Length: 380
Image (cartoon, rainbow, N blue to C red; front, side, top):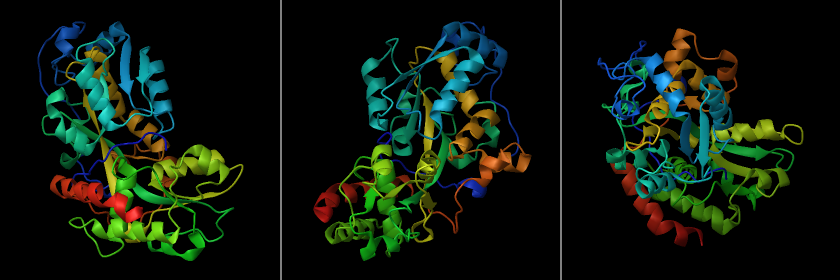
């Protein structure tokens, strides 16, 4: 569906109103590099270190271009985010491989090196951020202090940006009684109706759905096997479709029930409201949430524009744009307290009951191994 986001993990923090953070802002460092000197911005770890925010804007405008990768327009409102940034600063955004994965992003950084078309910035699954820190340029945005410590590298190599919960989307015109829990998916009435967003050995949302299945069936963050077995059961019963859902398969009715991030399922609700009611539920029996992470390529061909992009994304304006995409921005708790979060957008988010569970890197690595070695046989 949209882009196949490779497997990611969440660090120990809580999404939405459960997020915790300090109510203050400010980047690091003093300094005095010339604002228009791109080479100086290539090593600047904050706007202040590079000569100040106005100097950063001036240098980024002088560069005139930002290279992004793997950002489909309909993913978490990235289309509007890119357009708003471009219009605001007069910077052309070159978007490469919009349907690409996190691995595609890393490959591009490694293969393109210092070429002019190399990505300036990356939006990665957390495991890819953690595993490739040497490729990134540390940078602390002005709102750094309001980002929870668990959601950022201490030196600014990567920072969580937006996230969401695994949810169940359902075409109520084709499914009279839409499922609201993971357990519901096994009911005979859903034969030939349930789809995962791609292959869980490759895509983050599908992998997270399997983990949600584990949590709903006696598993844990240390044991994803019950999730593999559960979806194996759904496959053998005929409930699990072997179709990768897309907006087209949702519109045509080929995939009437889809497990995906809540911000993507809610987007389908809005897109299809004239034709049918796409209902969205966050299952309380398999509550699983996840963030993605931002990073700057240390060899970014447009280092000032790359840093300005980060400043924009983590500003109140940028965070509200993700909220408009039904994603839950990392600064949401602080912004809600400060009154800067758009209340109408906040009210449109799906309701969540219970506390989500967050795996460690070690737990995720172990779970990935289990899924990689058992998924194909379990669902064949």
